[in-house]
Length: 369
Image 1 (tube, rainbow, N blue to C red):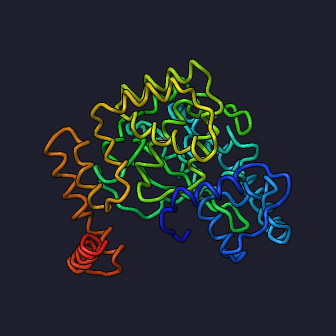
Image 2: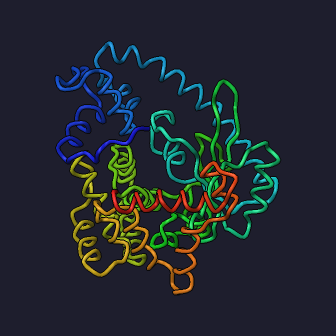
């Protein structure tokens, strides 16, 4: 997906009003958008099929997108079968401490049809101590581990992929921390999420997903922690749908969780943005109490600074590691990853040349953005 500049609130509001709500009659293509440009915008925001579902697209565009809808629905069936097979394999191996979260979990829990929620992978959270057993299941089912840097304090996840035929593949992001950001990584672990977890009757009763309260908090962390420089409507629409499903006691649990975990400001920002764009029903008393909680010092407020460069986030995020020695190790592991990784990443047989090329590229990013 080609990145675009983070949209202004007015542009987001217009897109949300026109394409994220059921329409009595299709809207005309905006005068300042060619049809291809409109599709590019909708694709970036992840709402193309949502707009089609809401009868919000002009006739010609809607007709052209019907084939995409059919293809995505068929693709979803292939991935659904593969996901069921994977979790059955986990269960047969006695691996019950695993939870499906983020996009795929939401697609099957809060959307009318799973293909309305685009995503490139399915995310699973586990206990790192059981990682070898989970990897054995992936190997048994023919998944391939994708190339990525492996370092203890750099990435808390690995991706496994399996071709499903007809050009489709299922990618699984296996996480042992909820986020790669150190300030957010310990917000939840798998056991905490399993306490209040729900099952997915639309997919399989054997698959656990976070409850709506925890899913909303995770969605807020993902929006600002993982993508602070972007703003995609689908992330906010996730939050809107989740917030709509909460009852009074759910809101109380949310307040308690984010206050205790010192992530009230991030959660509040996402809720307020959802409210602005989608008129999300949020009790005023909840907003007031979250504002009070968010007024206290929270290291995670770093990610509300949306204009920082990635190296600035990286440097300040090191505070999420308790020990100075771990902060030093994290810097070292980022600067000097394993030689095999560098040779492959930089497409060279010589590790030293690879490190030099990688260092030059890093300096360019730091000084030119």
